[in-house]
Structures are given as C-alpha cells and as structure tokens.
Length: 391
Ligand SMILES: O=C([O-])CC(=O)C(=O)O
Ligand SMILES: [Mg+2]
Image (cartoon, rainbow, N blue to C red; front, side, top):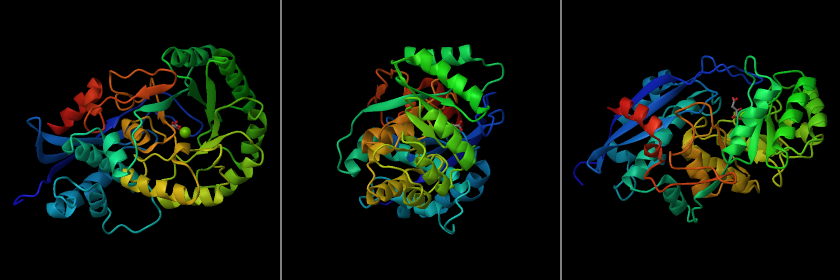
C-alpha cells in the first residue's frame, strides 16, 4: 500500500449538557461535554469515515487538553505507525500509545477524560472501517460470543428545585412505564430523615415491579456512611453506591462490615491502577458488589481492557461491571465482552445519552441493533450534532 490510511483531522467542541439537577456533591447548571470527531481518509458508502466520541456527564468538557496535547499527537504521528499489522485499519492501542507519549504515570486528573473521549471516536472509526457493530468487533477480538441483549437501569431521582415526593414517584413510575425494572435515585443531598422518606416514597411507588438503587456520590465521611448503611440495610436495595470519597478504600472496606447488601462504586476511578487498588484494598465483594468504571472518563476502551484484565487477575467476573455514564460505548462493551449491563439516563444529558431510536427497553433490557461502529448513526438528534461538527 503506497499511501497509508490516515487520520486527517480531529475536531472538538465543548457543548453544554446543563440542567438544574443536583446530586449530593455537585449541581449540573454549568455541566459541559466535549464532542469530538476523528476524520479519516477511508471511504465507506461514498463518504469519509468519521468516528465520534464524547465524555460522560460529571466531568466537564476537555477542549483545552484535547486541542493542546492529545489531538496534535494523533495528527503528528506517522500514519503507518498507527495501523494494525494487516495495514487495513487503525490499531486503537497504537493510537492510544501515541496520545499518551510523554505523559508520566499516576495523578490521572482529567487527562483521562480527554483521552477517553478521543478513544471512543477512534473505536467508532475502527468499527466503521471494519463495517461491523463495535460489540461484534470486540467479541471477535476477545474470542467471545456477543450477546446483543443488555441489562440497563434508569438513573435519575436527582434533587431538583421544588421537587417533592410526588414528583419523585411520578419520575420513577415513568421509568417503569418505559420498560425498566431497576431505577436509581440520589441520596446524601438531604438529611437522613428526609432521604428515608424519599426512599420509602419510591419503594411504595415501585412495589414489587422494580428494584431501587441509591447513589450518595461520594459525599459521606465514615460515620455518615455507616449511619446510612444501618438505615439502608433494612430496605431491599439493588445497591448502595459511592458512599464515601472514591479514593478512600479504607472507608469502603469498613463500610462492608455494616452493609451486607450490594455496594457499588468506581465511576470516579480513572485508570486500571486505581481500579486494581479498589479491588485490593476496598473490601468489595466479588459475589455481590458492582463496579462502575466508565471508559469515557478513564482513558477509554484501551485502558478499560487493562482494567478488565485486573479484574480477571483479582478473581472478579466481568459481569460484575455495570459502567457509569449511560452512553452507547459502554453498551457495546457490555454486549461484546459480557459486562453485567449499563447505566441509562432516560430523561437527562440529551442528546448524548440513550439508545438508537429503534431501541426499546423491555423487561429492563435492550437489544443492540446491527449498526456499524458504536451506533450513533441510529440516533437522529445525536448524529445531527455530530455531523455538524464534522462538516
Ligand atoms: O450524578 C452524577 O454525577 C452521575 C452519577 O453519579 C451516576 O450516574 O451514577
Ligand atoms: Mg454515581
């Protein structure tokens, strides 16, 4: 091949995904995301292949880092050095290594978000060049059978100005009406007595039709985390999420003694080394607890593959992972590599979150359509903002 296929442009735009909601730690009035387009010179169906990516909510857009360091490294790399052995596609791990040249280890900060966003776009492009859905490409690469049917749960239940228990109940009811059978609400942004009342209102609403997960967003010190554990363990909860600071493994471990039910955490651990430390020191139990590492915030799928390897070494099944973020990237990883499911925000962070337009939630599961790449082309409102960026 005389001319290697190449990445010809990398574009970024920082977009608002703001709303007046709040969790126990932050409000989302100024929340943004980076949308990126990785433009290649490969032509499929008469058009250049463009891969798209964005970062999950909770961390802000990363335009500065993407424009100053990570996009230039991709564009300055010798195009041949980014190709797979057959020379017929980009090798995502080589692209990842090019982006991470001259970056020291540790202190992952927010560069993991910048790289995760670009990594999503690179994998989207790679699967489109291969003319396959990403979940099928991943299953093939790992010698596994893909399972297009993926568990999803509805995340919401935020604190919101003027929102009373009736509104919270109505929100949860609407998720059940849309086919979900696990719903999630925020706790820790109000005193325990108020949260108890909110939880009991939701449990009364959902009855035996669904299960409830609760999320404290890392707000509690050990004493408060334990006080909540003692209150929460009386309820049949799906999980108790991010009780304390995400990097306080001693707190998480101590909490396990007071909370026999399932715990969940990991959305704010941004590297396989941090994830491995959680498994080593966080007292998480592979028979019942859940891991929520989100590739879009933590250096992307190339790094997530290393995280999954750390799980395997620590004796954890990949089906204990239900990633944070509600994006189609993790949906593909779930379907391709056998994760336990994926988060979904039925009413929030649009147009980024959610599923292709043809997809319905049934009995708490979705079935992946057979779209090349991650599947963004199947979601009309999303692909329209993406194409605006690329054109
Ligand atoms: O409110 C947030 O930051 C999002 C979150 O924790 C989740 O989806 O689990
Ligand atoms: Mg959370």
